[in-house]
Image (cartoon, rainbow, N blue to C red):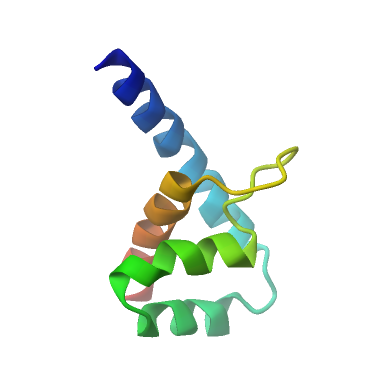
Length: 78
């Protein structure tokens, strides 16, 4: 349980960074619209593809962070 809780805590800290990286994208409005047109289960992959969930110093995004970021951005898009 501690490992899961620690993983969840990391995702909670990284998802807002993902949102901040989204806000720096000059095409963010159109990309958010495109994300909102996708099924909920596709949104995390879309976020990962945009690079917003790739943390500084990392080469690849974390799928849980991408999914959480998608949920946060979906709340903005509604």
